[in-house]
Image 1: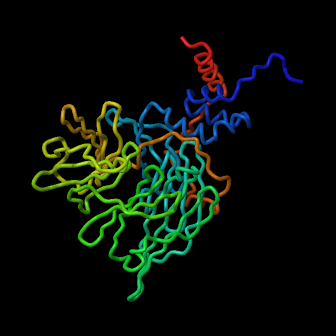
Image 2: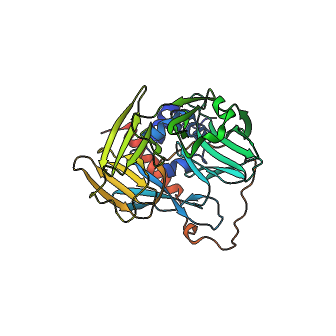
Image 3: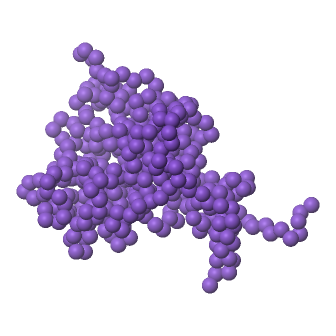
Length: 391
């Protein structure tokens, strides 16, 4: 028999309430009700929650080789006016990639896929690997199905022979399958040098590719699982050029030394490239002792200011209105913009995470970040009041 004093809240209203809650009480709510959990893990809610975020943060690596499972540090820090969230991990790992708030860490023998906020981590076998292989990775989401996929391309050479193998991992099922590489790479893969860095933009993974004396961009549509070539802007692309996802647009950053030390940033629209920033670096606060070989754009503030980093872990912010550059940090290993996501990962890994090599607990992880049930109820009541009785 139903309790006559109970209040039933329809799913649509519950979703609106949860959208306005901080992420910590949302995580707690998932453990209190199967119905709530179903709402909070739905693709519709996960997508709306990401777009609803008001604050912009940056994810950076806190280097530690203690062997513990990668996870967020309890507290964020500010560099200038930018809030930095730190992921406790070993930065010596070959590749760290992100997509929609998930982090993919590729190691020599396995792959870790992590949701930093929910603390879910899944571990997958890499398969056979040889030191004679040159490995290039990619990580992204299929825009049609919402599934996350890891892409592995391995170029091998033995004596006078060489070849390329491409495979895809579905994070949801843990299954690998082979993929046909671009036809031109089958005949002469060593002449097509792929950048180890990749980015995912709108359902495709992109790599900058050095071909002969020129450059182009190799793209893989994660839904169709077909490769295609993307032309670069009509500018002088060099080995110092960096590829990025800036505000959900494919972006390349080109650094010039002569005749002027400057940084040009190009973004690709639906059909063509356009220059979004051209920044003179000399005399703008960028240290001269070590000239950076490459700059990577990170994010754009609501005021239109550009945050970017260099290959020496220095973090900068450019103010277009005043044409000023400020150095925010001299030692920050930026990974990507940070998104708080509730995207669930599959229930099981194909491999367990190994025990840390050290027996002592890492000091930076000793502080617990708790959110009590009382705080959850108070926050929920406040938000419910705002939704039902707006001012």
